[in-house]
Every structure is written in C-alpha cells, then in structure tokens.
Amino acid sequence: MRGVTRSSWPGLAMAGLSLIALLMQGGSVHAQAVAAQPGSAPSTPATPPAQTLTVAAYPAVDDIVRAAIPAWKRRHPTIDIRVISRQFADHHTAMTTALSTANHLPDVMALEVGYAGRFAQGGGLEDLRRAPFEIARFQTQWVPYAFAQATSRSGSVVAAPMDIGPGTLLYRTDVLTRAGLVEADLTRSWDSYVAAGVKIKATTGAYLMAHARDLKDIMIRAGIAPGEGLYFDQQSRVLVTSPRFVRAFELAREVRRQKLDARVSAWSNEWSEGFRRGSLATQMSGAWLAGHLNNWLAPGTRGRWRAAQLPEGAWAAYGGTFLAIARGAAPERKMLAWEFIRMLTLERDSQLAAFKSQDAFPALLQAHDDPFFGQPIEFLGGQTARLLWREASVHISAVSVHKQDAFADEVINTELDKVLDHGKDIGLALADAQRLLERRAHR
Picture (cartoon, rainbow, N blue to C red):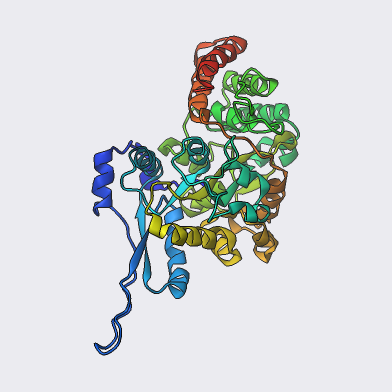
C-alpha cells in the first residue's frame, strides 16, 4: 500500500535532522495515548508506571496502527502506543536519518517495500531471523513473495510484511465503450494494449496512460526469473541490458511516439484531475489504487472503472508495507515491539480490519479465505475484483533485493527520459546504465 494523501502532493520535501528533532519533541506529531489506569488506594501497591511504545508511520498506515490500539490496550493496559505520523517521503527520510545517526529511533517503524529492500542491506535493522524473534517460524503464513522482499542477499530478514500490492490494470469502461473496445483489447498482449491506446486517443482524445514511465515500471517487474532481482542478480551482476528492459524501453518509446501518455507524474494535481475528467483511460498500479480513487482521488467516477489482470498474463508486485525494529532502538522494549508487529501482521482480525478500512491487501494467507474477498466493489461497478488480486498475489515471483536498487531506479529513469525526450538509442541508453551500475554494484 502506498500511503499518500492530498496533503502529500505538493512537494514531498526532504526532512533534515532538525525537523526530526522538532517532530520528536511534539511539532506536528499526531499521537494517540490512552491514560494509565488510576492508582489504587494508598494501602495497596501502586499500579506500575505506564510505558509507551512509539510507532513511526505514514498515511494510511498510521490510521491502521491507531485502530489497533484498543486491542493492544486490552492485552497491555499499562503500555501505551504513541503514533508519530509524517507524510510518505518525510517519513522515510526521517527513518533513513535516524538509522544513520542512531538518534530518535522509534520502537516500530513502517517501511514501504522499496525502502525495506534498501534498508535490508544497511545493517541498521534487527535481523528478525535471530532469537528472540525467529521470524522464519512464520514464513509460510505470509504470501511467499512478500517475505522475500524484506530478505537480504545474506539471508537476513529485516521486516515483517503487513500488506502487499498485487499489480492490476484499472481502466475506464465509459472511455473503452466510446472507443469501441473491450477489456480483452487491453489485456491480450502488451502490443495490443498500446494499439488500443492509439484507438482510444483517435476516437475519444483520452490518453492511454499518465506517463510512459508507468509502462516501463510494470514491464521490468514482470517475468523476473527465480534468483534474479529487479536490476541485479544474486551475484550482483547487472541485468539492465536484458530483453526485459529492452522491450520495456521499446514499448515506452512507442507510447511517447504515438502521443499516448499525458506526461504527468503520479500524485500530481494533473494526475488526479485526469482521473476525474476521464482524460486518462487506464492506470497500472497496485490494487490499493482502487481504494484511493474511491476515497479521495476521483470519487465522482464511481462505477466507471473496472480492474483486470495485467496485459499478456504478466504478474507484478507494486507496493507493500513492512514493519521493522531498528537495531539501535531501546532494548527493553524490543520484545513489546515484536509483539505489536506480530499482532498487526500475523493475526487474521488485524489484517482484515486494515483491509476493510484502508484497502490494505493482506499479506497473511490465513486472511485470504474471508468472504470479504468475494464482495462486490461499488466503485468498480459491482465487480468482485479482490478475487482477481488474490489470484495475482499467488503468481507473483519473489524478487531478490539489492542495496543499490534505489540508485539503479534513478539511473534507469534518467536513461529512459533521454530516450523519450531526446531520441537516444535504446541500446546505447541501457549500455550506459549498465556501465554506471557495474561501478556501483559492489559498493
């Protein structure tokens, strides 16, 4: 799940250490604490002083944590939960700085999947395989690929999966009808998807997608062989000149040549306005996006959207939330932190509550048999789309993480922009990316 709200659109500013200190002292921090029970009469022993467990999160993970507080307090009446909530980018910047300085570390930190993979190589998070956590005991209870996303090349596991983002294709039925197309025209193959975009643009004026980069992002995540990562294999060999990247770049270039993308970035005002006005016909993303569209991005379009599996039988993960414990966090509260993480990630009721309230697709397999999956989704015209997403979740391959994945993502996006905007040859662009990444692969 991507925790993004309206207030995070205009400039996700990078928070410095001074901002972190201000936030930890109470500035713009949203906290929820439950008062300790009143002390008993003077003639009896005093109630033990309340402890506080600090959880750092981003929207809407912070709401999930707050909703879990009553259940936690029933188990631990004297242990409060304090929620430190920041916008998505600010949160991860704060966690990066806190881990590097060992200052202002929370007891539990939420991490989006991309950051979980990056931090897995840094050594700042507890290896949950080790005693007293022993997370491997629970590995088979989660969707297989989710567990792998927080596993480093050395085998350490730095976080527990809370929710996942099965990739899906969301499309506007009214736009397709006006263009004389059906869902199969979008999903038959990647080539037919682009061809459908040509017809959509010619007959309706709508764009096929927000940005050609979106197509690349999904295609390089599909069809990854076992043992490979997104950009590197298990021996840190760079993979960006492989056919997977070549084809992704070629189709993204074709989208731009045919003027099928609106050239707007995700989470911008133009992006959300495109959904509301019907000028964006499709969006490939995680299943969580349907909830965002319904709740705040484009609620007025209810009933006009449908979900489908990705084109050409592709399966890809897009987003997900993990919970971790910093190695430098307060040692006296680490087992409490682990218990809280287990409550949110391994208990069916917690997983389903987050799914029903925040569209956080459960990582816990035990929650996947709930009747809620088969309920129609009003926003999607009564479609039982959760069944599609559940099917996708079991087909997605586990992808190895690498400490240079974030840097590789920047390099590939830069080279793609050179292809799209300046006509750079694809082979040359990927070869340049390969050389740059090879110099960084073993750092």
